[in-house]
Image 1 (cartoon, rainbow, N blue to C red):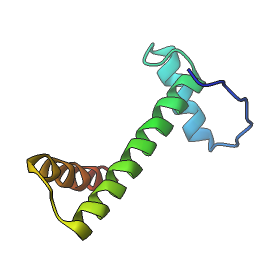
Image 2: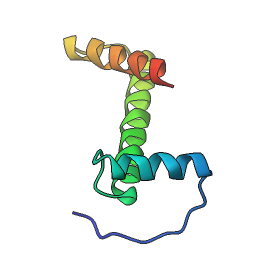
Image 3: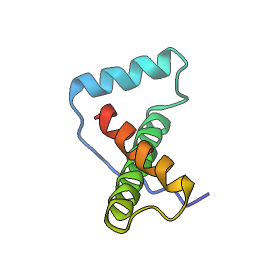
Length: 79
């Protein structure tokens, strides 16, 4: 696992309340863990969008490329 680096961020009070509620309800072990999960999800989303853009430019090479295109559209629905 990569080394952790501590940073300070300012968040809206509603976001902090969500983090605290999630931790208190046992949905996440800590604020940092939930923020890490959200950042990893965002990274996967951006990678999927990049892959979708590449495939739309070059066209599919095999049947799995259609799945990538579908997943990119599915991520758009989440935003």
